[in-house]
Length: 139
Image 1 (cartoon, rainbow, N blue to C red):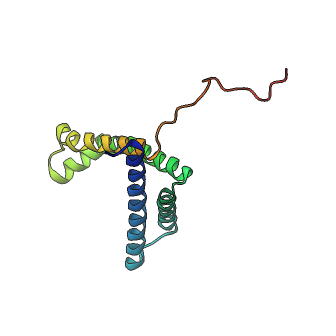
Image 2: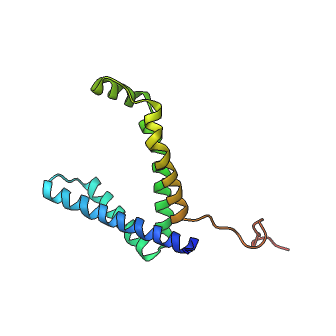
Image 3: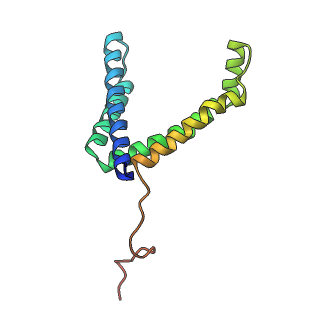
């Protein structure tokens, strides 16, 4: 039986490997097509650094990856389910996608993103008193 700690560690490693492979593939395509810019180079370096940081278990890389996944989980539905996208699809295809067809793939993707956020950077519980102590207070 796999414990939660092992599951979180494996998910973090898989996410790190995917980031490194995605960064390397995009960088290779960027070089082969001779179509690169400074912004895309910086983006690939950040993605590769996050992937290597996840592979080594760096806390900052885990927190930054969780933040990136939260942003994707928020922006993806808002970006896809807006009137401008629907009008573009209506102009190209003749019909806009139905809400059920969008939700059919959007809901499992959002559930996966929430699970990935939890697996990469789990919620920490404070030990001891809940109120912070004031160390600068004078008696």
